[in-house]
Length: 297
Image 1 (cartoon, rainbow, N blue to C red):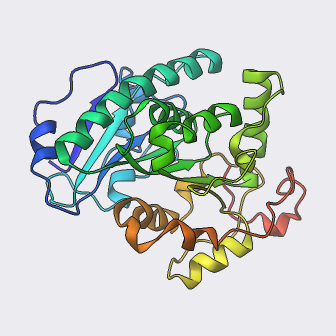
Image 2: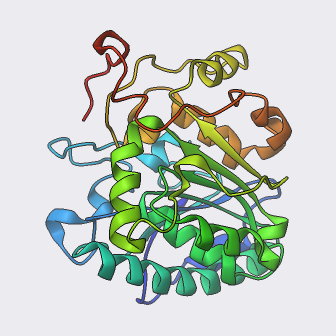
């Protein structure tokens, strides 16, 4: 089985460890982490019927198969995709705390997977799933985590700084995917979780880190550079959208390369895609309508 569903706080499926032990050399392990308002305990909100499924419910909004986009099948030999479910329903403050607890449990799972499979584990998380990923990175063993892709991360700078400065963080590589489309969500997070005292990760860390890059996906320079690398990405951007890092056509091809064949897309190369300076906050909301053509909200 190439795709394994694991729910935080519950028993791990029996075949997971054997699958990890039997992985051929060079095959990746990728843990996929959903964000806010999903829960495996609620049928109507289960991520295993939505973005973490190979066959998402076609009637669901914003349904796009992450494992499929990453190149995994149900029983193939592409590697091991772990679909992590956790209870992300409820008030934001409560779910934020639950994300930290989920990250602590995930760190133990990552350590065991890395040891069993004899290779680092890659992570991809959207929104509060990125909060889970960073909480796990902060607690994992050195070398257990390889690449981390954060999609519109719902986390604050001080916590991310602590994660990247941890023993596991110093040996990992983080791609923080940002967009000015996410500005309203960043501001709401800052106000609710820190009363505006701390910035969200929409502008990255306070100071540069050699193993952390911020990739602004609504910047023409970024899309142009990725296009020259052979990635065909849908143009246009919404005024406000929290889901564009996985809904915009072509972007998941980048995340697939970054996570599954990291040697083919080194961080130093991706860093060249960044604009000279990130666009200012609210620049997307203030852009002329013709520049906001994708229609997503």
